Length: 263
Image (tube, rainbow, N blue to C red; front, side, top):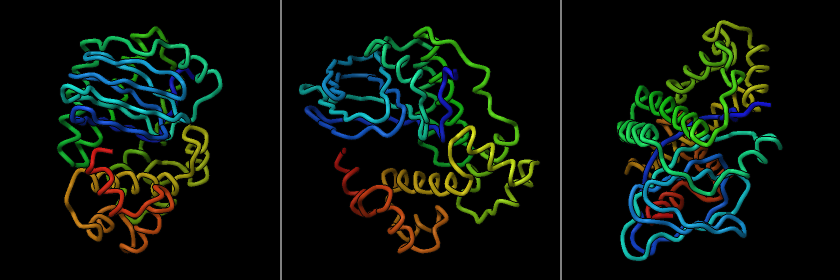
């Protein structure tokens, strides 16, 4: 059994909720949620617990989550997401038996600070480093709760080369032949590696990454939607809006307004 999930991509970030802030969502990914200051009451399905400063918890995909943040003071929290993780029944059982919250180790705090600063730089190099920092945050969390590492988690070298190229060139046209050449393998073998390790094809991986980067720009910048579409590799703003709505159930402009309100 693979103890650690194989993610599609990682992301580290942070946000401050005002006193009494709330959030309700359907969790799609594997995510670590940690509190720097303030507190939050978290309800997952029918279970509820309180998370205080210096505590971290693991949230599993496929559950409805309701957050009620401290009513007296702002709550400054961070998150580390492993998007696209396909969890086995054994992993779900293993993770589901973990404590609701654990204390953040000094190493986790150091890594989250690193990931947070990299997230603010908005460059390809910073995103790559942010990705590595997030992997280390998950590794340190699993180490702290007593889940051993798994050598099978190491990705095939060809897949690593392909992922690195996509991460730094996701807005550019890239066909399977070119990606195979960059990864030093055949297109057919590369497809097999993506499906085996990430449960997705290379082309779908590229489009999902473009959508995620576009969603980040909608939240983190004031760039107009047409420019975001161009920066993220979409053929037009209409194409971008159509694909975005299919995946996020709202238009890019509605998503930006929704997230700017702290949702």
